[in-house]
Image 1 (cartoon, one colour):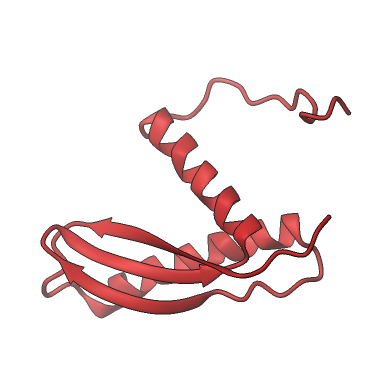
Image 2: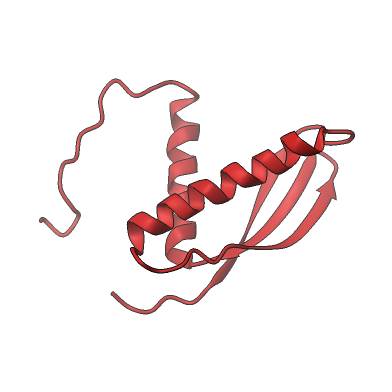
Length: 104
């Protein structure tokens, strides 16, 4: 597996964050980094999950968050978010492993 360099990615937290309870707000980031660390541990065992908060920017419909992490972790995290969005909050009926793309 080749060496990856760190990359930046931006996510948008949509909602009204004006006056949000600090514990709730920081809990969102705690859960975000916990999920990314879990992904990192699965993809890169023994490698530290360096996740950096680079910028928080209030926008009209929420907050833009700029993070930096290993690109492999970012790709997996985004793919998980896409699956979650596709399921629309529902639990899948069944999840099965059907092999890797390379045929193994």
